[in-house]
Image (cartoon, rainbow, N blue to C red; front, side):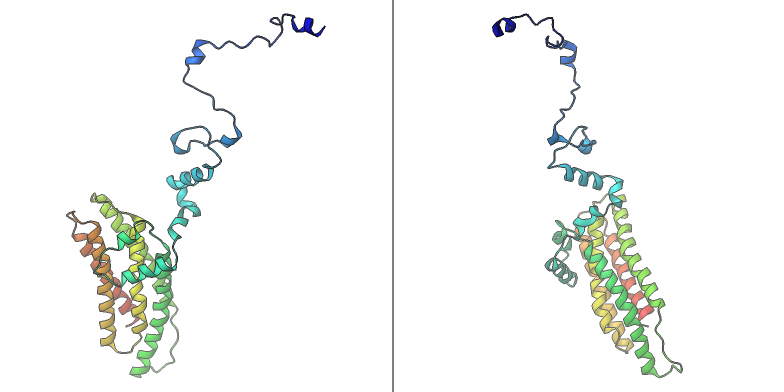
Length: 270
């Protein structure tokens, strides 16, 4: 009985005949992506090709997408790579900023430029010159004995210091970046921010000595610190654009850095 039923013709039954694929469909260039759990969720065009992404590359694709378009500017995860430094890295870069004649700072940060130094050094410098500037004013008044009223802490020093230091550390590297781009020279904005941030470190050390209530000593200290910081910036810029007819760029950077040093002296340690 079973064998007789098995020998019955089934070609007339619905669905028993295999689908015939026409030649047009075979030669069509469009292929429907296979629904596979290993290829889900869809890639949404990351990398320039539509389709699906694997589980292993999903996070990398999303991160690459967020950093390559304008939305990455507002994504905090886009900046985590610029804070991937340890104590040894920071200390080595701080020491390099105190030796301006080397001019090899860009080679040291080539693989891993950071913004940690820019933020940390600039913030420290703001509070240092605001607080020590008040202390220096107090010592000068006590030494001269010309003040007939009681001395009070000037809070406006903090606002002025924050505006000047943060503005200088952000705007000046940005200006040199666009200038070099316009002149046809390769430039990296993050590396410029990193270098200018570490160039401010010597002003923190010099501020500790600027509280000495002797004008000659103060001027000597700030000129030496300003020249060292300005030379650090100028020498590294010169090595960065070596071979190009752009020698006025390091000179301009040197003048601006010296101007910052004179500003710190005249406004906070006068």
